[in-house]
Image (cartoon, rainbow, N blue to C red):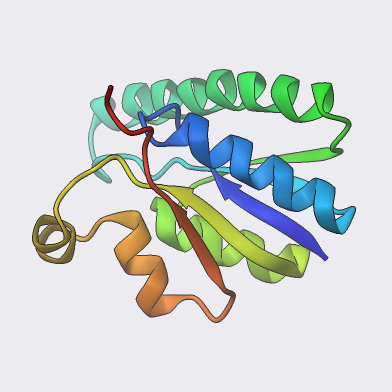
Length: 140
């Protein structure tokens, strides 16, 4: 089994990373770090430029997460998947036999998330694996 984390360096990602590392440590499992890299549009020359920029941003962000996990003694697997974040997490969870999917929330309202389709909201409705949604740090 594994712990799957959606990581994108958003405001909620740092706290979600810490939670995912704690869960992986508690169960002695690997941490699968996932970045959903769906390109913004399917046509034209801009597609290739956007596609590579999104994949590169994902790889860079995941590098920071790998360093944090390995510093805590948690083995990692990195996946940059060409799907939207929710679908990428569901796909990775299925392939890696995930115990849980961990995602951060960056404080958008529940109504906004429901209307616009936030990743945590989509996962709660689509995933067959339990989802741990970690709120952002409280403001001081």
